[in-house]
Image (cartoon, rainbow over all chains, first blue to last red; front, top):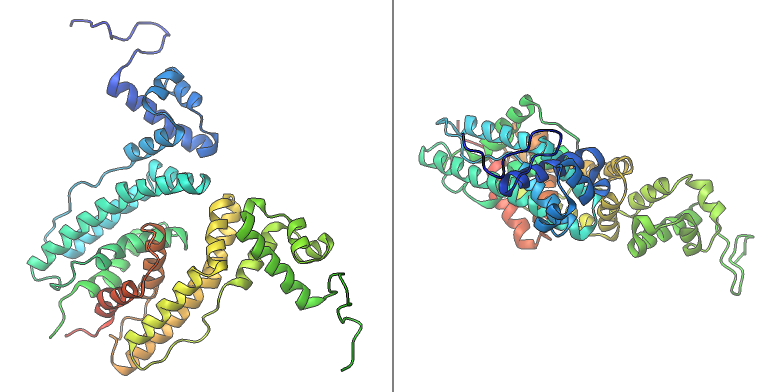
Length: 206
Length: 206
């Protein structure tokens, strides 16, 4: 196997990495630091040390702590890319709810909420944007797909595909996580689908 | 008119007040300070000065800044005591939504959200409790009344009186205030009632 000049040197020296590999190492180190010392404790130096690289390598890519942390959180959030399609709106909604729960309670999800709590108002708006872009918008997109498929099957009323309906699950999940400190057991997710979403979606007489 | 020994002296000296009157002056001063300098800037000395009293009078009633601020916020939140009763679930829900909006955007409501953002995790839990006790629980109690009256009139399905349904309005209102920075226009409140709550509540065939 040919060795390139970027091959990691043998011994105790840190591996020499470039591009995407180094970037990923820095983002991972930032997420780890957030978990350990929080937003206020995190420093560019600390992240560089955690990624076994120099401060300059970090600053070259992220001019500020906000930029770095926003990217680290965004990259760390689990993705829900494809809408479930079980042929039943109940099963699809339950799967989606479990996906949202997984995002909320992932390391990045927990760190994201802690950061928003710790940082100042202007920074908080930026991280709120990470929630919208990384959690809310993808979830609403998948919900829309699930509901539209339900309408096509005649399982869901034809006027249910609107923003208030799409927001109900993210709203309930964030609200109860925050206000009631609920962790959303499987039973609670089922109850929400059965007592809130299915009555909201079913076709009505007349 | 008889003058008691508590009558305010004439001149520049601050009025001598006791009990509930002094307490109210201190709580008002605390709320004012919160609006001006925020949680971090607020001091017991500043509040005492604002209320034209001594620090000891403040500490005698509230041993800590948290205690004082929690009471000030709770006392400052507008109350929604009685459930609207227009004979129509749509009108009742709209009235309730407007009441919640009024609480969220009152001076105390705005200060409460700012304080939760500024303070640490342990303190935040306490102030979260003020939201639950001062906004969420009263709202849910009134919603329950409105929905039960709707069931009695046959306007609402009989199995709609449950916690997931009661939480939908507070959840949506907090979620969109926070995540979408929506201020909830009258039109948006109507849309939420018409597109989310009424389909959720109406009786179903079979």
